[in-house]
Length: 64
Length: 158
Image 1 (cartoon, rainbow over the protein chains, first blue to last red):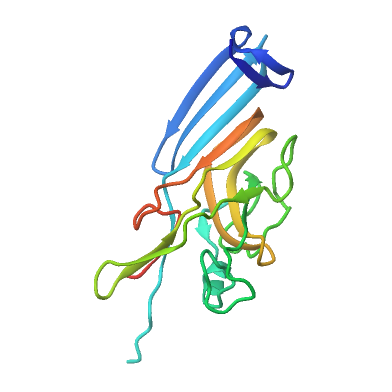
Image 2 (tube, helix red, strand yellow):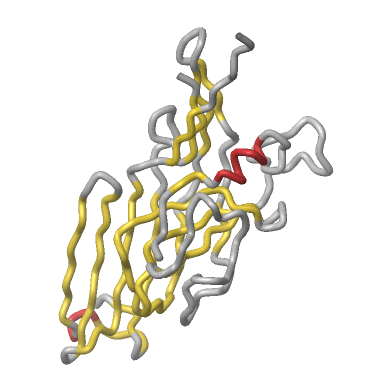
């Protein structure tokens, strides 16, 4: 029996409708999971893996 | 209004004065790593390269989330690597995922601001992602590999 944290407290996963999905693009790989109870969203978690870093080019000026 | 992924201009300038310390600085009040934090921002906020310090304006709010966000673990000191005689790269990546545990963030958010809480909350970088909401759940940001090409923060010469 797996318990899920919900807006209504800990609930048995078997009592809930589970939805999951993912987004994969140049910027991120994201997965999410939702649990619904009688049409009401009671849990949503998301996990984002960032792909793009922040990069800055550093240059030294010349004297001529 | 929109958030824009960027290394803040103020941060780049502050690197020259050692305002930010990811490792050990030669002359400083302390030689330990500064403390960094990560705050989440609403999709309607305006956090970008012009952001100089952490602000509550546009920050998410909700059950389980404390203003200012969570601590960022900087367990790895910065690395500087030469790629040729004229070019190189310095980089650093938080050594652990950034996690907001058991929160409810009902209004869509799409950005995280990493800032230096030791140095008057000065901004470091903004990272954007697809808009999210969280309901009695966990939001996790997984860091990329800390390498010359993938590290979260890179300064490079070409």
